[in-house]
Amino acid sequence: MKVAITGANSSVGKNLLVRLSKEEDITIVAGVRNEKVIPELPKNPAIKPTIINYDDIKSLEKALDGADIVIHLAGILIETKHSNYANANIAATAAIVDAAKKSDVKSIIFISVVGASPESRNAYFRSKGVAEKLVLSSGLGARILRTPILFGPNAAGSQAIIGMISSGQAKLLGGGHYQMRPLDIDDLSEALTILCSTSIQDQVTYELVGPESAPYRDIIEMTAQVMGKTIAFGNVPILLAKFGAAITSILKGGGITPTVIDVITQDEIVKTNADSALGITLTPMKRTLEKMTSLGD
Image 1 (cartoon, rainbow, N blue to C red):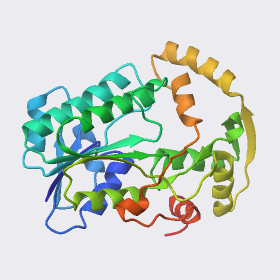
Image 2 (spheres, rainbow, N blue to C red):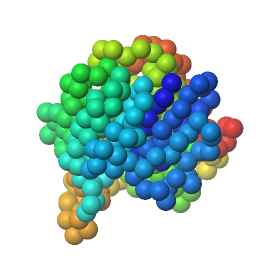
Image 3 (tube, rainbow, N blue to C red):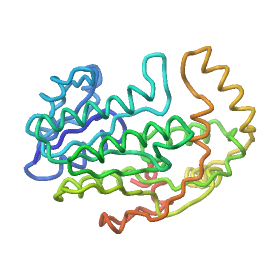
Image 4 (cartoon, rainbow, N blue to C red):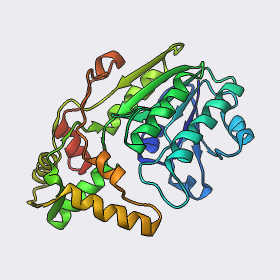
């Protein structure tokens, strides 16, 4: 089996490369945009680092040549002067779908986000929803996996929490009372590995979240307990944060915006969790917190 992965240098990508490389008779195309990040990728004979350019359809076709399945991980939450939702989330997905069809790839898996909808008033959620539609209408066998915040040793969400705990204080948007269902990054990799081993011919959207829901503040407090530390909490009013973010992002040409704040503070709610449908056993939150702080290894 040959699997092509975009965004292979992300925390999810690296974790997935390690998991997939344990499978027998597999070749993994690890797609990255910059050769400077190649040394960061896991080392395994099955992993073939490949430079991809979403603006060059021929290079994408070459990268996907012979692949049985594509896992599209690449995308952004925070826009910059050089990358926005239109090109990084929508146009890049369109390019991958086009190249996959021209390269006779049979199926595609797209990692999306809980809350994605092409009709969303939030620009980020809307871009992911539009990208989902591109995948589902491609004619390829397709699986959409909508995920929440991801926790793992190198995941951005985990590093943010550990950083706050290490500083001894956490100033949280709205007091951190929004509900989260963090997913262990290892559970996501396991789900993707299972999907790669199945025949995907139709189009299905899944929502895969962690087994437990808790306010963000409580999750930070639980993590502090795991680390044997204490933390003081402060409240940042959401409207005030949005006002400041609007001004700062305009001056910087990107960064944290009111859109990003809305994403961060939205409750992570799903109708049906896909763990049973995908055949995986979710890691309990406490165990995930132990792993991400390197105290449970």
